[in-house]
Image (cartoon, rainbow, N blue to C red):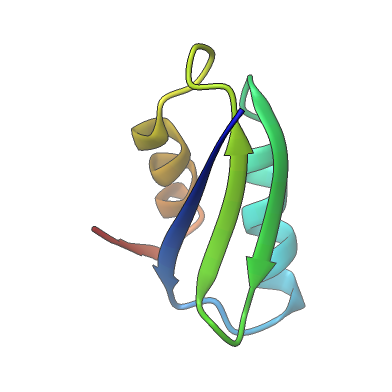
Length: 69
């Protein structure tokens, strides 16, 4: 498993946490998702052979949040 810390703008409440957690968690190869509202980050454990980091970032963006690259 690899771990990525993704900076995300626009997350402000528990609804945001649930939306991002559900979207990322639904991808193949995800081991865990942790959202830190205060820091504006999403920490993801994932199997790089099953899912690319770009796919994870796209899943977050599809929920209406901006990923800082």
